[in-house]
Image (cartoon, rainbow, N blue to C red; front, top):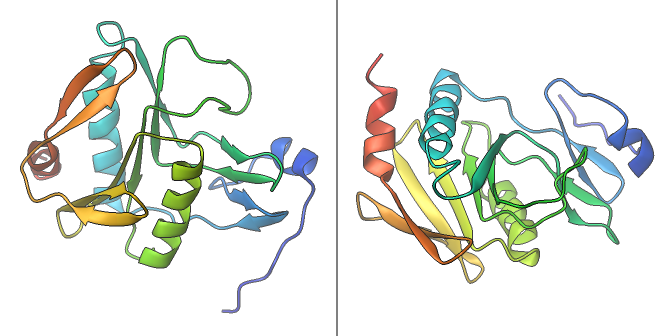
Length: 179
């Protein structure tokens, strides 16, 4: 099936609900791949994991929430999960740079698409960009314009206020199999 380009205004995008939600890049709606059960399970596990630090680390967890990545270029992305430090600007769309973004790879996602998304996040100075593949149990960080495989069982994420949070990648993947 050929992809159809759908041009809409920013106002129309911001005032329309899409199922599933779509990215908005340079005036065009961009389809996001819908995840598998493992994708959804990992997303729920990550929400619970980060959610336990809401009060102690002064963060908020937002799954599949629209994020302004470039107002001049009219770009909005919908990351699988984003973490904001408190306080943050409240509104219909996230306008503050997140402390953490996690993209969960769906089987239909290409690495070119994932890297394009990561470049958008890098442009707004997101310090922690993580890509996780629940099907193959691999994870990467996006650093300096490239994906770097996470070879360790855990990595440290730096949150606002210079707080370091241990992110146990292997443990989080293992939780998918606990059902």
